[in-house]
Length: 287
Image (cartoon, rainbow, N blue to C red; front, side, top):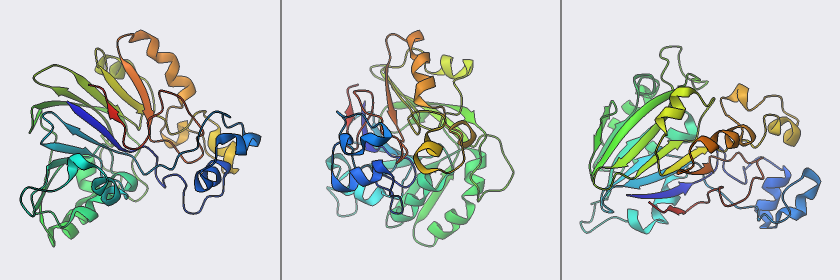
């Protein structure tokens, strides 16, 4: 199995176009975090530019699946050698898109894939319902197959899904409960497994069991602390109220899984987190 991080930021990316917080300003200038020490950025951290959250997964190195389609998907695809088209002129290694939420920063990129000869998109009932208007738009350009999750994926992968949250996007109706999913992808040949859970509101017993024995887990790194957004921008709202478990909480739950490597993605533009467990765009996980 191969897993490549295409984008590592939450919605808006870093720097966010309309944000002048110290993290975004440092990213624009390509400066080290010490330039924004007044807001307690780690002095050793280089503030990185990040595109929005998306991951590519393959079981055989030839057939690939996208986990979410960010607004930056075109840039992510053309800068990733494994996802280049060919050998046919319109042949692509992309087999399907797996949507874990219906949030705009995970789905707007579908519109940029309209040149495809066909799109297979897997999602829950609630997410498919919310995206029905987008499906109709895409159908004017290409053949779209919106389907439920299935236990097997092309290229030798198996898939399990767990509903971890019920927070619906602001634009969506009230129907459904399975709005936010975690995914576990396993190499059917080697047994190695990868868990994707970048929107995680709580670490439940069900989630604890879901990730047990996994080799790599990509966790929700949106916020470092519960009050980060207010401290950094003055805006009201806690991490918990926005459906995100802060890093300071989830790090304490990892000890129960000594054989698993945990990393963090989906970083908000206010999050100055740095270290070996913080992923960057383009990182290939060692599976």
